[in-house]
Image (cartoon, rainbow, N blue to C red; front, side):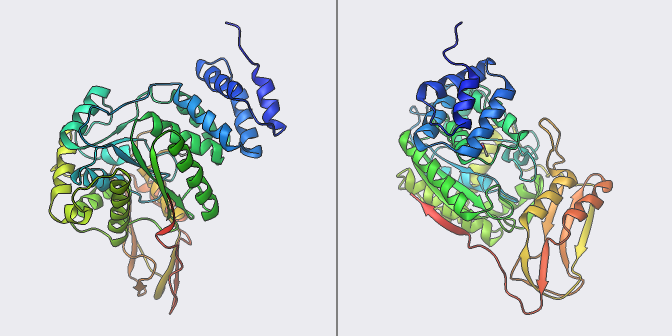
Amino acid sequence: MIEAFAAVEIIAAKRDSQVLSDAQINWVVDAYTRGVVADEQMSALAMAILLNGMNSHEISQWTHAMINSGERMNWKMLDRPTVDKHSTGGVGDKITLPLAPLVAACGGAVPQLSGRGLGHTGGTLDKMESIQGWRASLSNDEMLRVLQETGAVICAAGDSLAPADKKLYALRDVTATVEAIPLIASSIMSKKIAEGTSALVLDVKTGSGAFMSDPNKAGELARVMVQLGKDAGVITRALVTAMDVPLGLTVGNALEVAESVEVLSGGGPADVVELTLLLAREMIDAAGIKGKDPEVALMDGSAMDHWRRMVIAQGGDPDSALPVAKESHTVLSQSAGTITEMDAMKVGVSSWRLGAGRSKQGEKVQHGAGIKLHAKPGEVVKKGDPLFTLFTDESVRFERALEALDGAVIIIEGGTAQQLPLVIERII
Ligand code: URA
């Protein structure tokens, strides 16, 4: 086959800050997926994009080229509107777990294709796999059946969904090119558009525990993604939300499942409940659903009922005991006063070091590992009060996990909490 372009010319064009043509973009994404463009050439191009950027037309074309590298799913056969949520990831962010069955209980169909955790942020599939028997890999027919029967499905994206992104994301991860807005926006949106949802709400995290720590950059990313969604005919909205402090009181797979079940039972920490309800209302509104109010669905047991049906439909036992780590260690406060800050990144890294996360693709996670928080910013503690309980199956992990927590909490007598508001910006 005679190739339409030479990769080196496209790399040089972006190195020199030129605008790439549609034909160049389509070719380079396709040729990379076919293995004609080598990893080192795509790495150089990704770095040139990170340094010199792309205009909105280039980003849109790049996104479409990634969508066209695989299959595009379609849920037109369902009798209710599809609506999904995507979070850019954060520490203790278990919102998908209560949110998907909650929106299903309110009349939506939620086709939630999720990922596994890499680095300090957890992955939804790792959390769900804490539930005995639960299966992440479903065929398209199984996905449809679960969606039809329960209104929500949480499962792994198949290999045929945006394969160009799978290859490119793995490359970006090891070439310091993750943090480029054109590459992040096209990566996320290619998967969400290919997934076939008709409405989408993006939860773009900002703060120390997010990969976009600067709120202005997070806002820019959100605007680019909303535009990409709208251009592709998906009703898309975004909330930029706080990730300077961990969400809720648990970090780590099974611990987060337990907290999500508390929320579905009408309890749970206030910030998790608030964000779950905010996102549910945004999803329902975006999809034009006139169903039950989400707060009612949490309180009357219908969201819990959808959760149980969704877990059972994927082979899980919602009544089985969740894994508990073999070892625990509690960190006590060294002083008295108000907790003014709690660094989400430090807590995330500590939980990861306890075994809740993985450092390379394919590694096994410890489902019981993680951290329970006993207090959050704004709360007053006495000397000797518990701040965190760390859990792991291997006590040798405590030392490095405790090192990561060094300086994670600031306690000042008479101080006030320094934290971002839960919602920083709304983009519709
Ligand atoms: N999540 C994705 O799916 N892609 C990115 O580039 C970053 C976060």
